[in-house]
Image 1 (cartoon, rainbow, N blue to C red):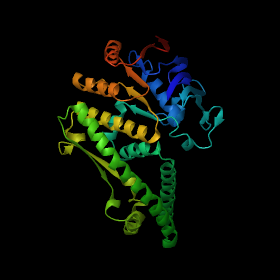
Image 2: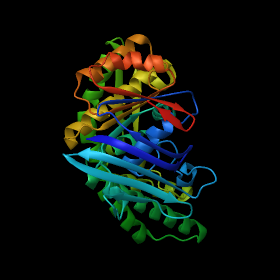
Image 3: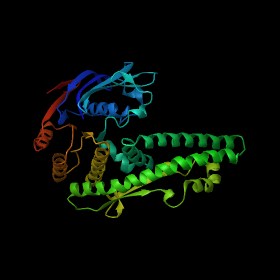
Image 4: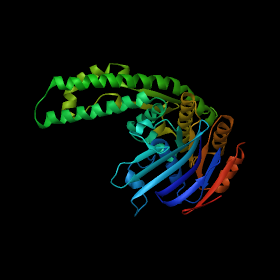
Length: 366
């Protein structure tokens, strides 16, 4: 699968711009603020129907305009596929594939497999457990539509149960029978999600460890551990145990929406004890393992977006990453960097065709 061309209209800082791409490596270079990351985000938008960096649709529309259009032409399975994402202020976003709009965005997820590696990924390490759950849910969802559907249903029931708990508190009442209906549904959906997360991580963790070992030359030992109370007790029992607490808090305090991943380096939390380079290596290994997993399950080479990944990595680690990309059967790569010379020097070491696209404000030159 390759992205052949991209057109942007009123997207972020771009008024109107068009690109034609190389089948293998495309490098966007230029100063900070010219829109390199915005182009990568537009490509991400075509795969997921949303921005990687700002999920608020209206904030992705160029200032003083009313709409944006992102238009991509792909080649997949020897046929052209045209995907358009458009949004107008005050209206629902639309995703079209070959001229036909999707009824729900979830139908589109997984059709254009993609992995992004960005400085923003540091949130996976530094922020709360929800960012780490989103990561594993995002990987599984690209290759398992049933999982995504179950996740959506589970989230909806949690919201309904929370509303019921608030109703109980406001009206000083309680209805155990109604609450039990929600508990049963959460147990059914939540148990399925837990089992799929467990099975996924059983496969994913060894791939991740191999990736990190290659990037770090085996200098450090890292671990990734799944943390869920469902490993000790069924969800239905957890929900029943927490009824008094949930009534007091007015929200559902237990369930798979509280699961987490533990990241450690040399038996210490990487958030506190890992250097910037080690944290970046950890995140790159996570994302390359994500690439491996999706490729294996979708039988398609995902598009790989590398946003400013050479920053804060020593030369040795950069060389390892480039060697990995060159040795493995990767598909199409998109790279952004502020240093044109550094980028070209790096990609010249890869035995693949490449294109350097220099951005100057809203203008591009090859």
